[in-house]
Amino acid sequence: MSERISGFQASPIRRLVPYANDAKRRGIHVFHLNIGQPDIKTPPQVIKAVQNYGAQIIAYGQSEGDLELREALPSYYKSFGVDISPEDLMITTGGSEALQFVFMTLCDPEDEIIIPEPYYTNVGAFAHGASVVLKPVTSNIADGFTLPDIDHFKAQITEKTRGILLCSPNNPTGHIYTDDELHQILELVREHDIFLIVDEVYREFCYDGKDFTSVLSYPEYADRVIVVDSFSKRYSMCGARIGTLVSKNHKVLDGAMKLAQARLCPPDIEQVAALAAVQTPHEYLDIVKAEYEKRRDFLVEELKKIPGVFCTSPKGAFYLVAKLPVEDAEDFCIYLLRDFQLNGQTVMLAPAEGFYVTPTLGHDEVRIAYVLNTVDLKYAMACLKAALESYPKRVRP
Image (cartoon, rainbow, N blue to C red):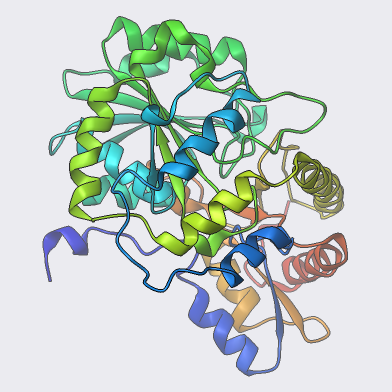
């Protein structure tokens, strides 16, 4: 096997799946809070569009994506105060491919991208595959994972730095970067002639009355801003694997196009689904947002009732990071699946160690995705509370 593949870590979101499968074979119901797979139904018109797919041949499409879909997206972004044209974006095979395109377009081997940690763990795999070095700036659970002081970012900038990567609303922390935080980063990237890449996949899900501000809405920085987006979460169509790469800097898009042409085209039927999704009445998203906010409030209150557990209330997305009274969260997550059950039920969580670049961090933390309804969340939290009480390696105060 190659040294490259040997250096990849198994996903902390999915690597415990064999334990979950074994628990299910033993008749135990597993509440999956480890992965961002919502139980909310996909808009019915999206399903109908796939069912009514009428082409006689599923043919190759345009490498940059279907024109009708690209022409439909500017009006969507306009609702967030963003003025783009179809030429400012390309359709990708999920937001994941968009991130891969960005790394391969901006970076040579051993170039560096600065990223706040904890971060979306699969970014580490994409960076490793492109031989890109992630330079972490650590945010802290005690202050709700707000953006670290700008001096910490400055300290990480070297001659090999090609950009700063943010995710807002953030996966896994739920933090939303403020206008002031974004301005500080934008000034920094302009000063050092590097890029700001922002994953805005969860832009619909901002809570407590907060409106979302896209980094694309700062025209004075447009030449160094790249946005990664996806249909997966907003329309509960994770399996469709359709995303977008957006930038006013057409040199970036021209570079990414070489990679897009090499993989030929994004999937055709999924683009039909995506077009139906972007035409979905906004009321659907309003209802979904309200549901996630209700789940967040419920989950945070339940976690606060469990002795030794600490978390803050996330401002967006549908994840939070919780600190548990354990020394090894992965060992505890395995215990939940292999050794524990409460009335024939247990819960699967994602150990947070794999969401950090720094190897000493996250060992007593988990990411929880509140993608299940409050009834299921109640059962899942009962499992978590009982498991912590029975876990033989629990850290006692």
